Amino acid sequence: MQKPNLHKTIFQITYKPELKFYGLLMEAAQKMNEYPHWSTDKLSIILRNYEKHCSLSIRHNTFTYEQDSSDEDMEAKFIQNALENLPSALQIKIFNRFGYRRKYIIAVNMPFESLVSVLHIKLFSQDDKLRSIMPSKIEDLMYRIDFMEDPYKYHITAGPV
Image: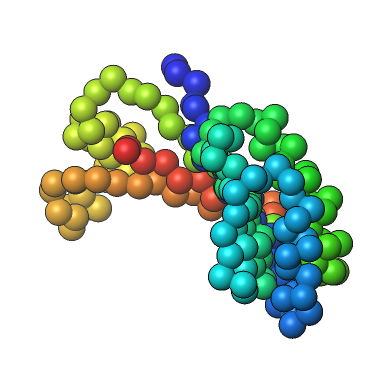
């Protein structure tokens, strides 16, 4: 079996918006020197590193790191740097949510339609009563499992691409 290839990482922290944020935004963004490119609408800022395929957006109620590569060391370093600098620079005391999402791709050597068919048989109940009320042709599918281990929630989504 082929090893999944990390394709994208998204790390996001949400917090209560406060008016003082706007006075702190630009100075906080300047602390993030791994990103040579930036754009702003003066209410939020997006910092980018095109060479490393990553960005950091800072908004009134959230900051989000996105990476379009499989470099796990860089991911850990850049997320750690954001966590070390932004909460204090933006004077964030309480976080509402930590979100961490990774997207993986596994290459398969079969047509999309065949992959849909195989996954349908493996992941969807083949009970005759259920199959009799469902349309017979499956064009696409997605399989999602939600886990919870207090205080964390996990979502795993799989499907053909």
